[in-house]
Amino acid sequence: MTSEVIHYQHDGVSFKGYLAKPDSVKEKIPAILIAHAWRGQDDFARQQADELAKFGYVGFAIDLYGNDALAQDDEEALQLMLPLFLNRKLLRERLQAGLKTLEKHSFIDQNAIGAIGFCFGGLCVIELLRSGAAIKGGVSFHGLLGDTIGNHKAHLTPNETIKGSLLILHGYKDPLVSQSDIIAIQDEMTKAGVDWQMNFYGQAMHAFTNPQADDKNSGLVYNHRSADRAWRAMNNFFNEIFSQ
Image (cartoon, rainbow, N blue to C red; front, side, top):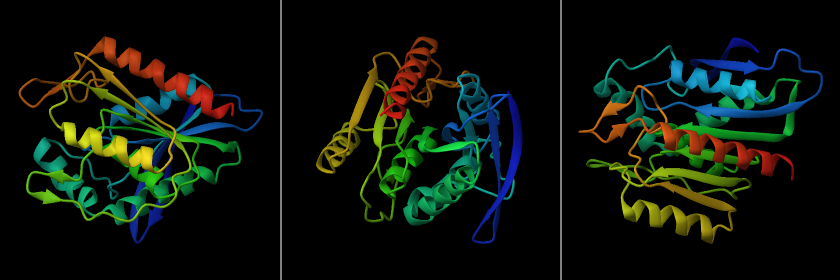
């Protein structure tokens, strides 16, 4: 595989995307956008792009914070994430900017573009679908599903027509997502006529796909078995929707 850093701009802010693809691309191939977790576009996000390239996709890890911002601890991460969590209009604009950057590449099959995201990025995938983006589908890995963090409530934006399918991969023991959040997203997608699925992993907590997650007090714990199952579920999902 080959990879490159791609610079792009939105509303006066500079962003760096990371694109990985198979070595030899002789025809247009599917592409998957990757939305990072709350610390920013880190090694984990870029590794997902590399893994997707090994499966024959173009993987594109976008940058939602810009200006080389990358949190060094949870406090910094919250400061970076919260403005976008609260301002869903701005979040959608930055997601669309990343998607448009991906779509410019000639080797992309424009009819086979998907998105995946982790934690905060899982919410981003859902917001990208809510924005009406013309993607085939999105996968939310242990995503934030609600509209409230502590005393902060998001300023929601009216949804456009959701065009793609949705797969939510969720840890049953995730302390960051309430039962009411789960019911709300299920009801929302059902009423919108979306082709949606939700997989629960019984012993998994939040961040269960990240090998660096090891904080039981915060509910962030890696679970190898659940991570493997979730990755296979993602592959099955994209194999299905990209063949339609």
